Length: 145
Image 1: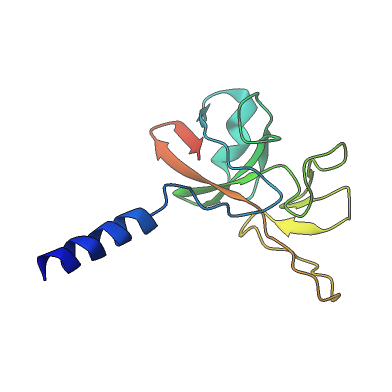
Image 2: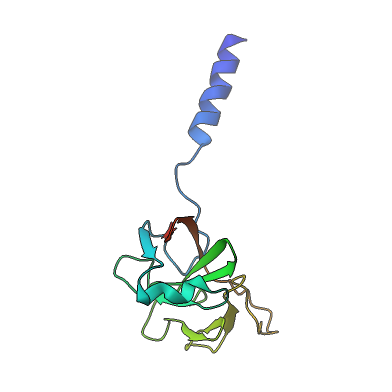
């Protein structure tokens, strides 16, 4: 009986994988942490709900990130690369008010939730924006993955 328990534990241990899940097959997961100081003029729009800011610094996501304050105490951050294309010359999203548009296919996504606003009815699967985590400490907002 003890052998069977050890065998079962060994099988379960070997079945575990250390691979992180890939949330989008077109976009690689990148690890980063970036601080946005809300006192700097570059990020003052983030003091008001609904004003997105593009953060294109090197090492932030794949093609940068769009960050927006969505309530008095919360921020959302999304990858700036189109979620339905591998990164290429046309796949950096362009801001359009509180939405972003993919120049490759003109699909539009909301920065309030990351979802498509104009989903095509062609039977294909479309991914929403790849989100990054955010936290706030004093006058700084951190985006990270």
